[in-house]
Length: 429
Image (cartoon, rainbow, N blue to C red; front, side):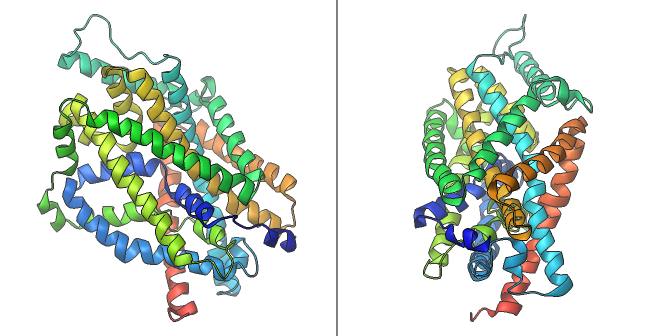
């Protein structure tokens, strides 16, 4: 089976750059980053953000690229990659985390991905009507009622009102559609699936984001919205939590500690320039995060909702505040559908890469062919996602999984990777 695995390679340098960048470009760029910035000093947040990117993001990211390429000599799964640097219990512990992290993140991330698809389709067919009857448009009471209706629509769609409520709506259907799309792309393989999709999806995402940004920058009062996002509060730099938030955003944004870059870079040959590829992928991700995420969400929400946007959570910003904005602005149905389609593309480009580590492990560890590994992992992850979907009251299961896996375990894996790179491999290599 290893001989079959070794035959699969990236077909171009652009392909690997776009594939890795697409794994990082996701909902965190468009929703999490602007929320973090506006709550942690606005423009001043960019100081610890850039420092974290240079001192933490780039070194850890490049260490993953280098370790992956070195480990790819013996295989492309997490155990085979780490086998080059560890033995015994440390090998089993670290490689287990490397397998579990992307899979467990996928099982709840794909649920959020389904929300994006549902909103895009609902906006496209005009099924989202948040306008209250009997109130004068433009008044504070009217806007408050629209926000309330948006909250009700979001809770009903996602089934967060009670455990099991998700099963009575359409969100389970959208989740299944997302599953089928993701696993179809993975079934096609590294070059024909992930790379080919990234070459189409990333340019489409950039073009649609540019269209939305153009509309945002032509709105009346946009200077106030940009001011809300970027006017610096320098006193925030004295707060430790601001620096921690910046470092956390860099880790989350670059998919550091997810184990994905390790797997992808293991398909590189010795002649491939991992430094150039790594820096290019990271830079493209940062461009999307700052150029689009930082210029669209908070500014446009501030124009229509005022200073209250700072109180919205990540989900609240994306699935309550933004639908309200599109309901209040001209041609909101078109731009709403476009916006959520952008979020859907960004989510798919991330989620599809989270499956590959599990597929590779099944193929190398158990000798499965692709036609067997894909349905096996589909079944396992779908059952786990059903648990997330069912126990969805107040997003309890989703939030708990996100904390322990998407926050805690990625730091654990990243820490071990840094130790391996610095003390086992050695910087001189």
